[in-house]
Image 1 (tube, helix red, strand yellow):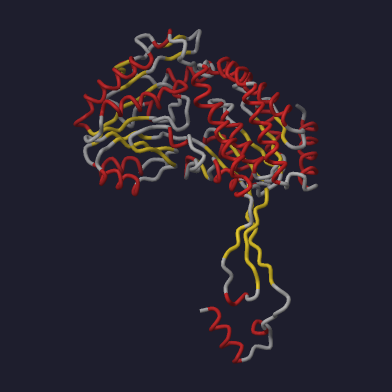
Image 2 (tube, rainbow, N blue to C red):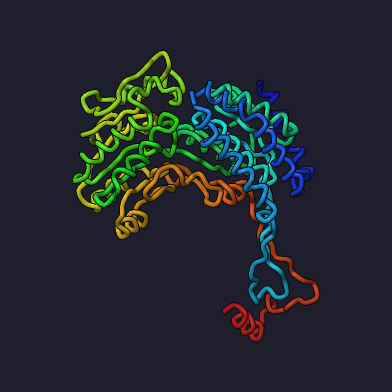
Length: 459
């Protein structure tokens, strides 16, 4: 798509938004219901596209993308009316007589830039939140997942007028053109490197941004953990989507006394869930492209592999791999893995473990397996991270009742449910002052009696 075509779409959306046509709640709900209906009708096509791009099974596609999108749509359809309501707040006596309230207003034209690892979910969820909040949307999906981008473009075209929502496909050239334009808000999901560029370009227009990034999310296992259950849930979270999940456990840091026992359980669970030959498992996905396939292979140290390590270059598949005797100097610990490699480090004391985590960039997620309430409380209190789970992995992002987002190097802002509505909403603080009374104390000339009244009212 050319620069002129992109500019025309943005201008049409801006004109449409300024007409006030996005403001009625009934219209927003009608659009959300239509989107939900079309997604349900085209579920198989969406699953086929995800299979083509990422090798996802039908079950995984529904559980992790289609179903979660439908859940968010259902939640927003039920709650948008309440989220959009004005909220009356307390008015100080000094402002008598008046009413103070918060009015929810959409930002305007929103740019949503989505990644390739969960291309449907991470496009449709923020789109849902933005439409519920009354915005128009330009959706730019990743060029690395072309089949899913195509089906999303068809769905958006079927559900919305171009001035309400539009999909712009393409690669870096289109990204650059979009980031040169003025939007009212930008929502980006992706890598830290690209997130910095998005934020820099947004700053030129003073555009607010929401960044959903990633990082090396730790998985802590202490001596009190149920090791069999911990291994089962870690293997699920780590190798889901071949490890290409922003909140996947990036590495394990376990108490040294349980390392060997945990490793044995991890090996058993990996074989149980993916079979003795995962590369022949039709339900196991693939790496997105050759570039990332080679990058992940370079993170492996064959001397430290205790399970897996095999790869199929033709199919872009890497078997679930576990590595032991890892240090922070190993290549696998120098970047977010974003692949099916699970390194294991150890710690001796809780103080050491907390220090190790806090000395590094703030992760998007943190997982803790423990039966010690005191230790759980201490880690949750003292460690900085976006969100996480106690005695599980991944599932904290699967609810619309809690916001999902990072902090520091792992992002800023959040979405899902009300948090998503608020992300695409400006809250206007308004005082409606009545005209039947006008207290004279604030006006000059100031007198002593007025000063005494001001002090009484404002204490």
